[in-house]
Amino acid sequence: MIQLTTPYDIQSQLHAIKQQKLQIEQDMGNLKKPPMGTVDLSFHRMKRQKTELQEKITKLNSILRPDIIA
Image (cartoon, rainbow, N blue to C red; front, side):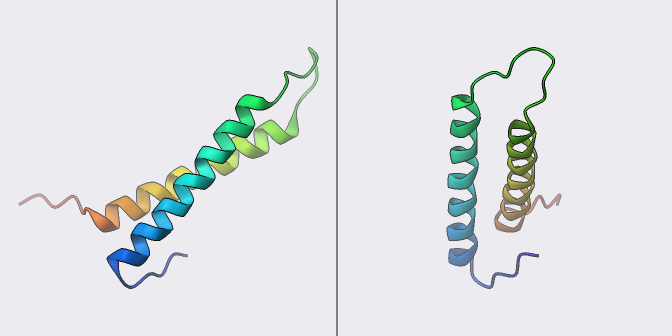
């Protein structure tokens, strides 16, 4: 659970999460393709982590810029 008090804290957390996501994307790009018929669990693990980080980014962005319909 994310509990931050100031917009500066949220911005710094958002920046850190974006850096983590970028690093995972780079690592995924550097992986070699496994032989046909095999499963690369590390790729699937990184894909899941990337999705979780994207959800956190979306959540933090919604805190910083709420979508208020007036």
